Length: 283
Ligand SMILES: NC(=O)c1ccc[n+]([C@@H]2O[C@H](COP(=O)([O-])OP(=O)(O)OC[C@H]3O[C@@H](n4cnc5c(N)ncnc54)[C@H](O)[C@@H]3O)[C@@H](O)[C@H]2O)c1
Image (cartoon, rainbow, N blue to C red):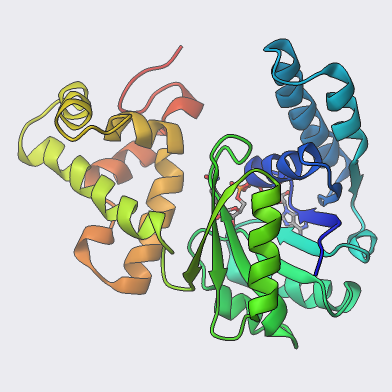
């Protein structure tokens, strides 16, 4: 099936970025938040990011205006009735997501693809809330969605090939680098990266290393483009801890559990770049 109109539900950090990706690549896009204020916040975010692209000469003012013109915002879920693909990016909690998918299936056409951007919940459990789980898949974008190319296209045992292939093709046309995977805890990147970053943090204490030296070691000795402490500060300590706890709950391996040091940082409000302090300080 051809995807022409895209819906995005939840326009926070991820949803606003996904809506931007969609309008930038020429798709009429309907975004839904729970209040007018949050809709306007999302429009301002997209406007600001596209404005930066114009300033840097990567986009013309006309293209920016056209992209923003393709974005319709609403608080009424019924306005997503004509969407061919709906991407959900609301809070990371199972019950609100299941409830939303039940509503979406009533509102959207029976052939619409319903995708969740969940990082750590089971796509299968979300799909089971609907009568047509074959139309439900995961589309896991990475933060910031307009910048990071990867999209993990996640299939459950009941997802149809057609839904997976159509979402994959759309992601490619939107300029992304999609990959396919099954619905397993952490999918691909988080399954590997989260325990690895937890190991890095444990090494700080076990080997008596400073965050500066740990980052120096991994960039110079392992060729990482960014050190683990700088990466954790960028991701957000709270986001990482939440994802670690979810993976630990699903897989039960000790390495998945967030290290004590990260829990302490979270408790102290040292969440990384967004709070001005994490492993490093930011002004
Ligand atoms: N932040 C990340 O790095 C990241 C990366 C990949 C995936 N994710 C996943 O994306 C999803 C969203 O994460 P986020 O960081 O953007 O969260 P966020 O808190 O920034 O945004 C969530 C938004 O959803 C809105 N919302 C809640 N219920 C709604 C509803 N029923 N209808 C419409 N809007 C609703 C909220 O008002 C909020 O603005 C989560 O499932 C998260 O796990 C996050």
